[in-house]
Structure formats: structure tokens, C-alpha cells
Image (cartoon, rainbow, N blue to C red):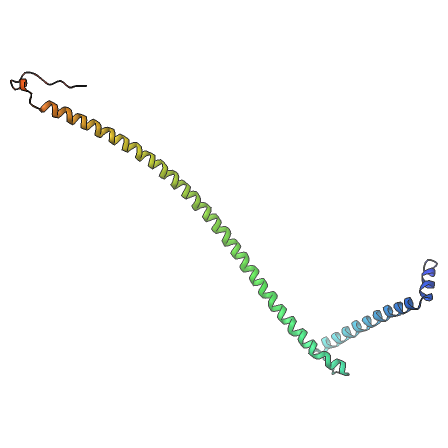
Length: 169
């Protein structure tokens, strides 16, 4: 108590501080009274199985009724929006999973495309090598054909028969 005495003296000396303390005490008392009354009303309604709504006793309570109804309407609206948000979140999660699957498939397809490009390059190189080999074989066949043509040509001294043609290098 000796520690509180200087504080109490300072509050008692200032009328504004005194009004503030009284206002705080009144707010606490009113809040406690409202809480106890609503608790009692709920308890009484639970015992009877029905929640009783008291008749308005003053014009202030009648003016509050539309606000209460609007509050209920807004609460219901927000509940619906929250449910919709949950649904949208689940759809978003499903879409994210599908995107991941598509990314995986795209990666596999890109790898397959790279494999096919490498195979195409290898086959192109093999094709070029085969074309070069074909051209060489054609050149050899052309040379063989030329040699055969030269061998089968009749030469003036060869009509008697004995001499065989020689191949030129």
C-alpha cells in the first residue's frame, strides 16, 4: 500500500484523472454485467431447449434489430465466401499438381527430342558417309566399265587373235 499512496494522491488531485478512473471502472462493470446477463440468458435457453429473444424494451433495441439481422446476413455471406475460398484453394492445389506433372512430362519429352536430334545427326553423318562410299563405288564401277570397254574394242592387230589387252594404270 505504501507504493500506491503517491499514485492515489496524484489521481485524487487531478479531476481529469479522477474522471478517467471512474470511466474505466464503469466500462469494466458494464462489460461484466453484459457478459453475465448473456451467460444467464444462454443458460436459461439451454435448459428450456429454446433460445429466447426478449421483446424490445426500448426504442434503442428496436433500432439495433436491423443491424443484428444485417450482421447475420454478412456472417452467412462470409461463411459462403470462406467455403468458396477453400474450394478455390483445393482447385488451385490440384492445378499446381497438374502443372508439375506437365512439367515432368515436358521434361521427358524434351529429353526424348534431344535423343531424337542426336539420332538424326548420327544418321545424317552415316548417310553422308554412305553417299561418299557410293560415289567412290560408282567411280570404281565407271573405271571398271571403261577398262572393259577398252578390252572389248577391236584393235587392228588383235584380229588375228593372240595378243591380250593390257590395262593402263
